[in-house]
View 1 (cartoon, rainbow, N blue to C red):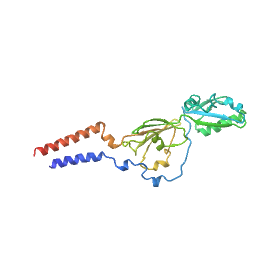
View 2: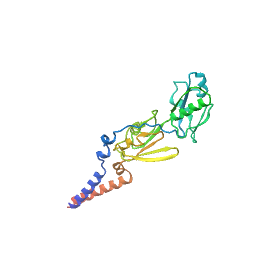
View 3: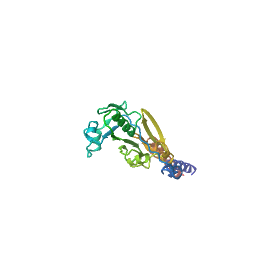
Length: 254
């Protein structure tokens, strides 16, 4: 009987250790305290492989025509067509712009690049009072791991949050590790890696609240998922079966 009790305790410990509590699952549990504050919007810096749509406008359309790509005035074209006709930022952080030639995008945002091009047009005597619009066409975020729809998602908004990006991927599965979400980010050739705890609202006041283009979000499996799969799961299963067999043997031989 003592052996049966001992084995029963071992099995119970294994089962309870593999269970997740609500503290491991609920998002933003301290939101009332840590989520209150001003939202600071930011425009990400342009990166190599970004594709830009740049439109130059003026009071006399004919004067701005040489500074626009051929499809620049077709409002019906799709995003994919605009990408093919856009300006690709090369690995040296430069674009090749009509008439003006090579222009650096290093450490510039879309709005800063628009101002830079506008000044070049004015200072070079090209257009008296131009209006320059720069849009990023291929902003994307990749979400992998324990989500319902992993993949790479495009977005056209200037700012989307980490939670919105996870929403694109159909939210975390019940097996997702919510307190160790991994985010990799590249800025000017430097890779930064951080772990975010979604069960706390602390991250909402950090630089990772808003997603930047080309961010990669990785959701690892939580402890119960790990314990129930692979090598760990096999060992646990074997231990459980052995314990049950021993217990039944003891009871039947008494």
